[in-house]
Length: 409
Ligand SMILES: Cc1cc2nc3c(=O)[nH]c(=O)nc-3n(C[C@H](O)[C@H](O)[C@H](O)COP(=O)(O)O)c2cc1C
Image (cartoon, rainbow, N blue to C red; front, side, top):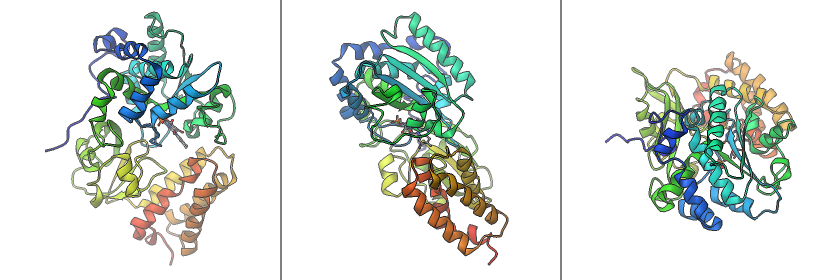
């Protein structure tokens, strides 16, 4: 039987008017916040950390409650909660869909986190192009304040600075502070010294959207859904050669095939050549190997990444050289330029891939791309550069003929 969606982060989609706090409250909204505020803060964190095992949905899959416990334990006269809504990853649009359908669930998750760690400042850093979502969020904050739900927490909505690297959590913090959005050296981690040097929790939109469900229904209930070590659901953004592109939310023990089936499968008359799962810095999976679980750890054991949950489906008409060329030019454009391997490496890789795209690649070019990848994976300052040529390595490993087709000898 075809898999069904399990909607937790998207539970209110289509059921409420996102402009109406009353609609949200009528669906049980803000009950979890009231429940959380009755709980001991360590008990609340333990529920999220150990019982629910919620892990970040922004890409790295880090244990959310563990992050919160770090911020709670850090010394600071002021603490911050930051929601990462920068969403610049190509092919990723799940946070946009969550925000435009249900902004209050994200605010409620942030207010629960603020109570847990003792934060009085909460900032949503939202991608600047998401004007509609920013307006919805600002309206939602006003409503939450009018209903007396924010307590001693000041909530702000910050419009992003228009760069992919602003989504990297420390670059994001620099951007909030009005500085250039360049990643910071870690440690210290944001939980110790984040926004304005104060202990800060940075979590993704989808991560926060899960928190009211976990607190409201109980961590044990949540942990019973999906894969044991990465429980709950994942919202996938599906694009490319499928019949019904869009966002689909499934339990984390579903397979990649199930997810693509929800999007109607591959477009009529075609077959799937490859899927790029996770975003631009992630590898490809062959069309014949999609019967694998989408859970973070199973994928990692198979050498794949879940990333942000982007699923780009490519039919047999694509040559992956064109895909890799596009990715490298995108990342080169978005590189902040702080570190030389990323700034120069992506520039050189772009020149080489342009040669391949024109059918003039050589074996020396392939060797150079591999050498650049090996250097950048270890020497770049942040994950943008470290993963920038992963797509090349993966595409060449799986479809070497695509590159040979574009070589002069
Ligand atoms: C170049 C780059 C871009 C990123 N963009 C985003 C983003 O748009 N949204 C996001 O939540 N995380 C993004 N991340 C990951 C964040 O640094 C961070 O891990 C995440 O916000 C933590 O939240 P989580 O634990 O809830 O996943 C990005 C990382 C890198 C290196």
